[in-house]
Amino acid sequence: MTIKDKLNETLPARALRQIKKLREKELGDIAADVVNSKRVRTNIQKRINQVLHIQRMVSEGMGTALGMVNISSRDDMQEVASKLATVEDVMAQLHVEMRQLRVALAQRAPGGAAEQIAPPAVKRTRKPPAPKV
Amino acid sequence: MAKPEKPQPAEATPNLGAQARESVERALLRNTVDLKLPDYDAEPVAVSPKEVVYARGTLRLWHYLPMTDEVYRVPLIMVMPLFGRPDILDLVKGQSLVEYLLLCGYDVFLMDWGRPRREHAHVGFEHYVDQFIPDCIRVACEITGEKEVSLFGYCSGGMLALIHAARHPDKQVRNLAVAAVPIDSDGMPISRAWTDPKYFDLERLIESMGVIPASLIDASFQVAKPLAKTTNRIAMLKKADDHAYVKAYLQMERWSADQISLPGQVARQLINDIFQKNLLFKGQMVLGGERVDLGRIKIPFLHATAQHDYLVPKAASKDVINVVGSADKTAIEVKGGHVSLLAGAGALYRLWPQLDAWLSVRSV
Image (cartoon, rainbow over all chains, first blue to last red; front, side, top):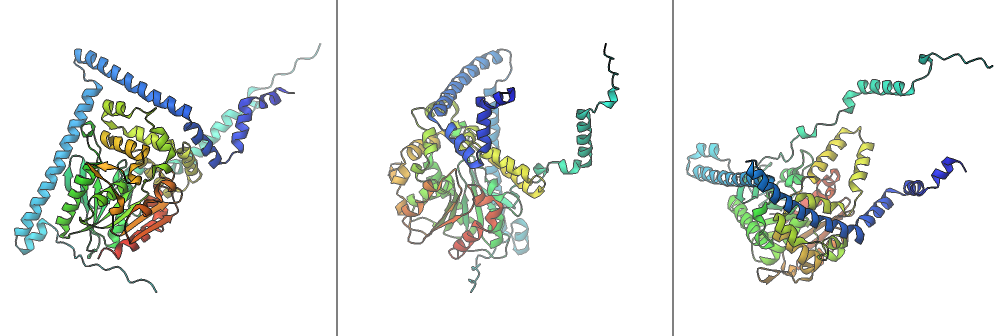
């Protein structure tokens, strides 16, 4: 038996040959079975818990250390991002109120001026097309 | 003594590596234009003209500017899924459900949930179905001068629309259309297994982050079909010379990577009540002290499903039609997957015309 034959008989090589024979769907099903096996699932779920724990520890530890040298931590930055998002939400509310004012103004304005402030309402009388015979 | 061989000059030995490199470089130089990836970032998404007409927290209600002189009387409100950005319904010109409906003559509104943050951890289903949706219906009615609207909900947005219609049966919803709604969690064994409280500590996650982060939601979608992204990429490479296809693929890819976080309380209800105990399907889900009975829905109802939907398998969605109490109800199944049902190139010929045909006669 040559070295090449021996290599071909090793487990990874056989496994690769088997995989090559499989079709896309079968391969997908096998991957789904592996990923969703109880062992993989429980391990990933354990890791998620560990990551959350570590993240909390690191966050608390680093927050204190960075605070001492007057540097913002990740939590500080997230808080800033959250506040900016809140400002955006308020801006959107202001935009809505301005729109309402514009509509109210248009209702009071005389004929031609009204259309410049707010577009006229479309007709709501559309009918579905007649069914094809 | 053997005569020593005369050494060959170095240049006579064929240097295959150098030749190959030279050939590749030549080919690259010749074909640089074709090798360039489409600049899909340059083409903006969600471009149908619209304005925000209501804002509350992260929620925005968008009103699209009508594209026809005359519109159907009953306005249409689209309820987005809890996890996805609304861009998918208005991807690009020519591949946009919103644009299609506008051209068909509908007055379209869209509820965009925005990106919930830690401070929204307390927001639950009650907020969505008893406050956000009614608020948006009220605003749409005020703007249009009408007394009723049609609701269209996609995926978990459909679930919200269903619960709203069941809890407010005498209110202003004239028609209800939903697509790919997960309702029977017995048909979603993977979601149920991954959220099993024996292994998955949801409370710890909510306590730590307030919301379920978008990255975790994206990962949870991948477990149902772990090789899906890889096979899609291989399929894309096979059509790499088709720029329109590659561009559409990359836009879809960009959208699917842009999930939104889920507020902690909604996650709690979704996982504990719906995925684990299947309470919504059994008619035993309680919100605000009141049982949600989908049988109370009596308005015209349409449910669309996709043949190859692996995120919301047929087993999880097919019975929506049976639990709803409407006399006028229609179920349609079209070719496609969970996303291509609404946003794929084929949707223009498959679902959209059927949705228009069903809705138009009920919107006058």
